[in-house]
Length: 139
Image (cartoon, rainbow, N blue to C red):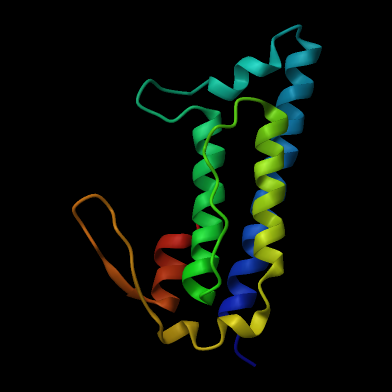
């Protein structure tokens, strides 16, 4: 039996987002054990030209929820990208997971052949659903 687009996307996104929560928990515990301000982690980045942690979590959330929206046709919630605390980032992840899990598997029926066009600056590449999932949406 072939694997469905639902099976190849929803559980993978949920697992990845749950992993991010575990990483936030470990980062917070490490900061507390080292006597550091855990709140400072939210705006910390590894390089000057890189999004800080909050931006990284926001992009992971957006990639997951918009992939599900594009593949299923079920509108994703809009988030304001205003998270400034680790708890707010955890809430965003939980809200993303809640949306992803709420989309019924049958909403993904036919997604393999659905044309998906995304805007990337001046570019607007188009994919079929399978190509979009495996070459763009999944890490």
